[in-house]
Image (cartoon, rainbow, N blue to C red; front, top):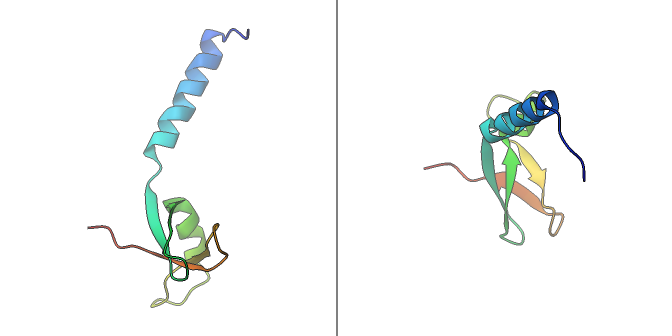
Length: 73
């Protein structure tokens, strides 16, 4: 059994809080129709290589098809 010191506990608590702050975007596969969650920071990183009117597309983890974001309501 591993016992956490108070310093380690505080660091882990901060890490969990940061994870809770990460915004998740929903993407849907154009081929198989399945949905998957993608962290917003990943989408922002891909967006740098695109033209102004282009949208980020990711590879579907289920069928290797093309996934596009589903606009939030």
